[in-house]
Image (cartoon, rainbow, N blue to C red):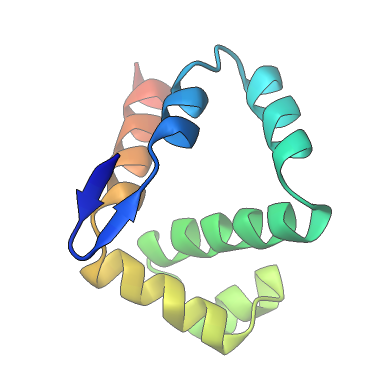
Length: 99
């Protein structure tokens, strides 16, 4: 287990995710792990983060994604004050696309 601030997380899920070797394996794993609603929520938050990082404004994002202003605001806080996870993924995706 890893301690994050006052919280303790069980790292076995994160280690399991790192074992996935393809997009299809990842899709299958998350289909088994999450409900349809949970997956849609995560997909929507990721899309919102992507659009925010591209400079779109709330109204444009709401129109494109149907996300609530509360969701957009929460994702924006994560982008601004989070641990940098979105940025790492976006940078790696950009590098992969360019490479």
